[in-house]
Structures are given as C-alpha cells and as structure tokens.
Image (cartoon, rainbow, N blue to C red; front, top):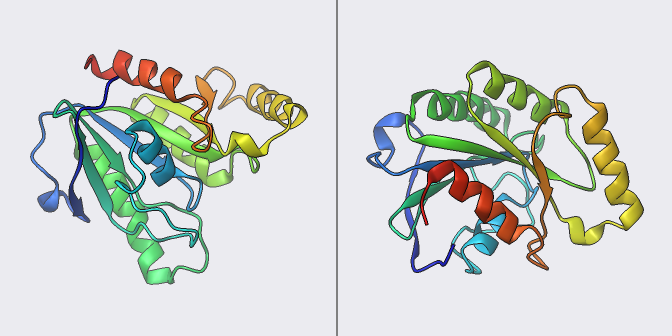
Length: 195
C-alpha cells in the first residue's frame, strides 16, 4: 500500500473516548516491548508516528492512527510487564477486552511476538480469547533481524508444534530491515479491502 497520509487520531481508555467508527480497524496487540510501535512506524514509513521506548509498559492507553483516510491502526497497551504498578496493569485487561468486544470495525488483530522469546502464556490466552469471540488474528514475529537461520527454523517448529498456533497464519518481521512489510500489507489489504 502506498502511504499518502498517516496521522495520530487520539488516545482512549474507555469506549466513550474512542473516535467515531466507520473505517476498518487493525488492532496491534502483544506483550510490552515486543515492537508494536516500531511495526506501526515501519508500516507507514514514519520514524515517530507511534512513540517507541526501550522502557516496557509505556503505552498505557489505546492509540488510534488513521492511514490514507481509509483504515485505522490501533495500538493496544502491552501486557505482561511486572514493573508497571499493579493498579495500572489491572486496568489494561478490561480496557483491551472492552475495545475488542465493542468495536464493530475490527477486521484483524495482529498479535506481535518477539521472535527471540516465542509465544508466552499471555499470548496464548489472548489467541484463545480471540478465537472464542471469532475475531480474526495473525501472528507477527518481530525482531527477526536478531535471529540466526537456525533460530528461525526453531521458532517455526515451535509454532507448528503448538495446537493453538499450528494452523494459524504467521510471518517474520523486522523493523530494521523491513522484512515482512510488503507481505503484511498484502494480508492487511485482504482483510480491509482498502488499496
């Protein structure tokens, strides 16, 4: 997809704060510090559209971005980071579940997993929840520029060996080399029918 415009729309923590619907939405989910913001920036050819940080747990609200006036990328708060205060972490799950259950425009949830770490229990729980609610999902393994070919093969084996993951589409992605970017846009376009 040729990116003509990419803009931050707003942050929200509850449904009454969400932007008005109508555009297809792609939700970006995953643990803290797996590269969700870097993936968004790479997809839209911008360095700082989505704020990146080396400190996990920085995204604490739902961030909405509009691309070409045709679709929305939605950056969800990361989960699984213990150093964020408990009261903050306890708000994330209901915030994310509320978004996923109430937004009628969601076309796909892109689950970001750090390729060096593999799927966590939280990742598997989210996939199970998405399946239960019949929300389509795609696994994107990020930071693949840091893997050797042997480590890549091992991650493929790990995915195919898990019953919850084995029949699910996935791709490798690197914000450094842009590996997987074109393939991801093809998948996105299939889900949103926006060119």
